[in-house]
Image (tube, rainbow, N blue to C red; front, top):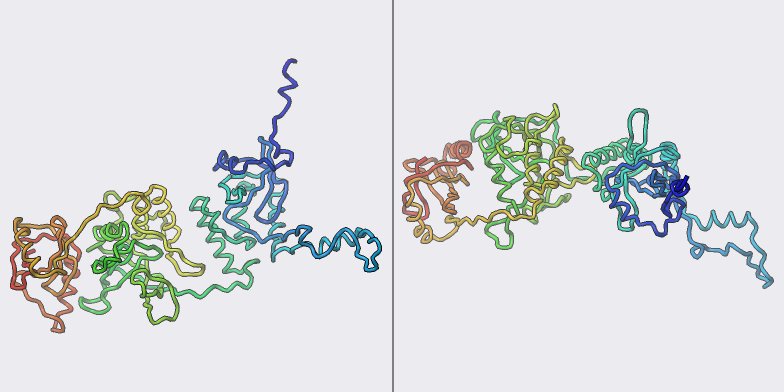
Length: 511
């Protein structure tokens, strides 16, 4: 039949017959990234590196499994690296040297020209051979490294399920987790790999035999859970909660709670020109203020950590230093099961063990915070996996700090930090409107506060008209301050009838 001979000829690439010199690994990875390719494992180089034969493309490809690295199987040194000539026997008499015997060649190659395998290298290779060698597998190409090695995931059948080779190696203590290649994987797979390595370390499996966890600056807090009202938002990752069980004015009534395992942008120091706020720092704090102030929350304290105070808010974990302080970290859950308008509802926890809305997860999903990079065996949030997933969603959507856009700039003139003449000159501009919407920024005493008026872009000091509360060290002073903190601190208020006092920059208002 005409043309039958031509149709029966397969056009196969050079790599199908082992010729890899012209193989374009990067082009292959780009063309097949994310695709599921059927293959047969032809060779296992070590526990985390296999050579597969792809079909129907009939190509030999070497795959380095993503997210894991097994111990090395050693290597054979080049001839120039050897310590003896492996072709002849050296004769001191000057006569022609005799050729080496087969036994001498074998001894020279195994003793002087080989680097032995790492500990558990043979066991890791044997494990991979028993699972995938000469078997049908599924390969998902993830990318390439800087040396054009192909990184991918290898899945092999086990009954009715498919197992991930890298996960099984890490789970059995035959490979360690590798961050740079794991970054090519989905966040859910990364979480599984990290948790598997952590569990293998705890059980001291194989390569982790004798492993001793490093000393950390964090300590767990057990069985400490309470409910209360949020009275102040210090920053995008720190709030103050008034415990419902403690009386007003009690030193133990208010808890400073730092949200576990997240870092919000730094607010900086307005008194220093060289310490300006980070991108989205104000937006992060304002987001928490509008969601939490005055709301009932449930707090689960999880761990405490020692940080350095040398760099202000740029805290660095240190040990046994005089310039340190201890912070308490916990997870905060909103009392309302319904997020505010515009919130990402996918950030609401779906697990039965996690009540209502995790505030840290909500911040991450809006792009107003980042995940803290914990070291091994360092304490972290009990809901760390959910936080990682929320952070990944925000990164993909380019929200908040992950976007290329800059937030709108808002310049606030603080009249509590300028001379009295400037405050007096600005007073007529405030008196043009009878009423102003404002935010209470600080409580000095039961009747004196600091107020920010967003529409006028200014902050002023002010007092309640017709009221005087006890001053510092007077009876009931702390109770009056605590009452005002719970009632109006960082709340949206309306002020009217602004009048000057003899202390020009102080204003009177009625709520």
